[in-house]
Image (cartoon, rainbow, N blue to C red):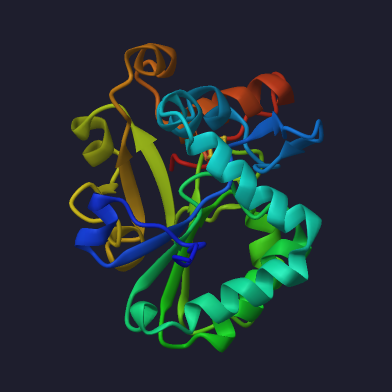
Amino acid sequence: MPREWLLRQNSELRREDIYNWSLPAWAGRLPDGRTYNTCPSASSCAKLCYARSGTYRFSGVLAAHERNLTMILDDLRGWEWRMESELNHPRYRGCHVRIHDSGDFLSREYLDAWLRIIRVVPAATFYAYTKEVALFKELVEPDPPVNFHWCYSLGGKQDHLVDREHDRHADVFTDEEAMKAAGYTSQEESDLLAIYGPPKVGIPANNIRHLRKRQGLASFGELQEQRDNRRRGPGKQYHPGRP
Ligand code: SF4
């Protein structure tokens, strides 16, 4: 029987020898009735999420992501063992593994499992975008595996914890001009610029019309800032992205 791989590649990622592990984006309900939220710190990004509005138009994608999530929820240790043994296959030697093109580190236990996997697979390099800033500052930053890189992504509940001058982070912009004006460099040429390029990573917004309209001219980080300031109320405004 052909082997069923946990990590996948599309044609774009294959070009750069990147493999990918995905979870369903944000919140939903599994076929067995359980509800989930794989992006506990998502906020402004959720209404503009490409995975939910774009990728899931293709039949089978959401189901495959939900199968991955089910493995984690039902038997985290078993999944960890399976992932670790898969990553010892020669095809992963020297490659990059992107953890999540949708979903996030949904729990401390799940992040811990990934950290153990990464440490025992030194032949591959792992990377991730994440909105779980507090968890990373506590569990990853003090002693990161040498083969793990991460990029905080704006548009979440923990944007205020991102140090915009020192932390590698990403924001999503609707046009190149706005991206440049804010001092961000596009990663469109290569997914790996997220971890090897300049630390202010600019992501061009996708081309889905209703999402573009909903986003307007603001970046994800700016939308989150507006949202947070509405909640804080007058006199308590906070503008992390501006001098
Ligand atoms: S964190 Fe990413 S995958 Fe999750 S809702 Fe936001 S944009 Fe979508």
